[in-house]
View 1 (cartoon, helix red, strand yellow):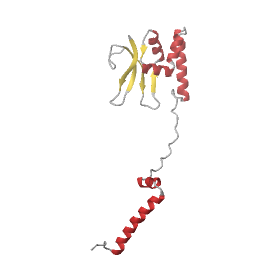
View 2 (cartoon, one colour):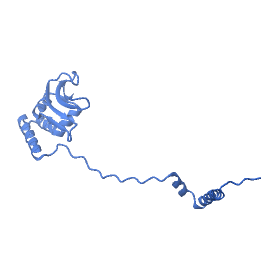
View 3 (tube, rainbow, N blue to C red):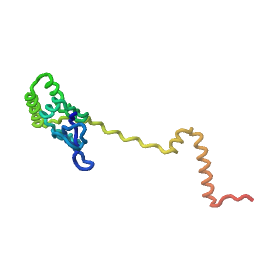
View 4 (tube, rainbow, N blue to C red):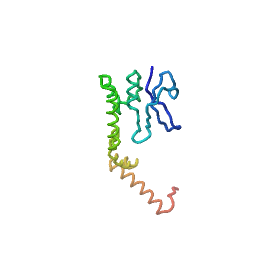
Length: 168
């Protein structure tokens, strides 16, 4: 079976791909029949260039695109033109239409995919209260004050006298 698929090229951790027509039994980066385009997912926006006429030819003779290539062809409109080719339109007319669409996109500078939606900046989170502040809010004021007064009284008594009381 003949497949239209991606062939990885590029340096380590910097992938780019060639869109190739290959036998399904050959390895991913191995033997292929024809290179019909390239795809670079690392650019913003993604760079996709596929020879429309060759892609339509291979689809018409029974080549099956992989899921990734099918997505690329759908975004370019090639699969829609292939459906029209199956209904009887000529290959030359469809290829000319694809060339006109490509020229308009290049002239106007339109992107082939929509811009990502912008999000509102998140509000800064409120500062978290310390454990003591949380406990003070949780306890009634009547319980907190006597304990604090007793502690303060003991501290004041030691500071004024200078020595602790000794019992005989």
